[in-house]
Amino acid sequence: MAERLKVTPCPHCRAIGALIRHGYLRGYDEGNLRHKAVRARRIFCSNRGRRPGCGRTFSVWIATKVRRLGLTTGALWRFLQRAAADSIAAAIRAAQCHLSDRTWQRIWRRFDQGQSKIRTALLGRCPAPAPIEPSRQPAAAQVLAHLQTAFPDAECPIAAFQHALRTFFV
Ligand SMILES: [Zn+2]
Image (cartoon, rainbow, N blue to C red; front, top):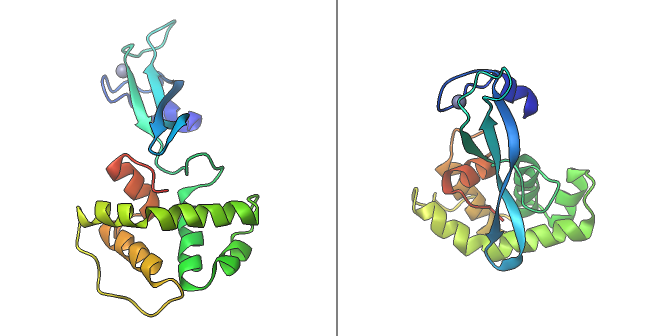
C-alpha cells in the first residue's frame, strides 16, 4: 500500500508523490455494535513541507480483507469453494494457514448464516445461475456460483462484492 501510494496520482489534483496514509475510517458492523471495524483507509494529499499535494483527504475502501481476521478474501474464496464442494475438514486442510480449525468453522457458520443476505444482494445485480452439479452443500455452492456470475471478470469475486456493495461479505 505504502509503495503503491508513491506512484498513485491524487484523485483531486493528480499530483504524484504527495499521498500519505492518514488513519482509518471505522464503522460498526451490523449485529455487532460493540466493535468498530476498519472500513477504509484515509489518505492525505500532503501539501506540507515540499510536498506537491493539494491538502485534501479521501478514503480508500479496503475490499480485500475479511473483517476481524488476518485473512484475505482470496483465501476465503478458496476455502468456501472447497468447503461447499467437498467438506469443511478438507477445506481447512487445504487452507494451510495460521487460523485454527475452530476459527475456520466459525467463518463457515458466519457465511452460512449470511447466505440469504448475500443472495438478496446478488439478485440486485443479476439473476441466479441455473442449478449446478450436485455438491455437498448445494445451497452454499449455489450462492458461490451466483457470486461468480455477478462478477465474472473479478480476480476475487468476494473482493469485488465487498467493493461494489461497500459491505463485508461475511
Ligand atoms: Zn491532491
